[in-house]
Amino acid sequence: MLTRRDLLVAAIAICSTAAVVALAQNASKPVMHSRVIQWNDLKVETTRNGERRNVFDAPTANLSQFECHITTLNPGEAPHAGHRHVDEEMMVIREGTVEAVLNGETNRVEAGGIIFCASNEMHGLRNAGTNRATYYVFKWLPRGLTK
Image (tube, rainbow, N blue to C red; front, side, top):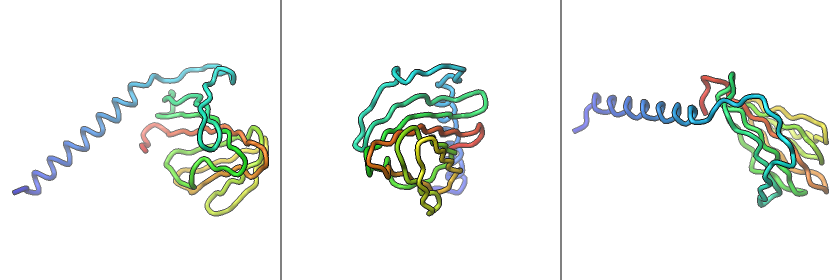
């Protein structure tokens, strides 16, 4: 028969293992340093709703994760359903027109516009134009904060 002590020991062992695995995964990625990234050097991945270019995803001196990708959406398409996450996110619209839904409020954003999504707040995006829309996504997670 399992006792409370057995359950406590098991819980501590599981949490310790998860922490070690998380640290090992983070430690496996080197800290990103200053760099130049050329548009033509980025690999284009075709998606069901357009294209995606992964730019970087690495820790920095101040962040446990800093990620950038570039999404191109076909007219009327959305990258995914509205959602929320602990990391903060900023999107810079390069071309086209999108509708950004932030906490239930819809905003029309044109090329050159910037969208900021705060931690744990609902947000979603859709190409509202008749041409393709391309935008840069920057996501970051401070050191000490976990997903």
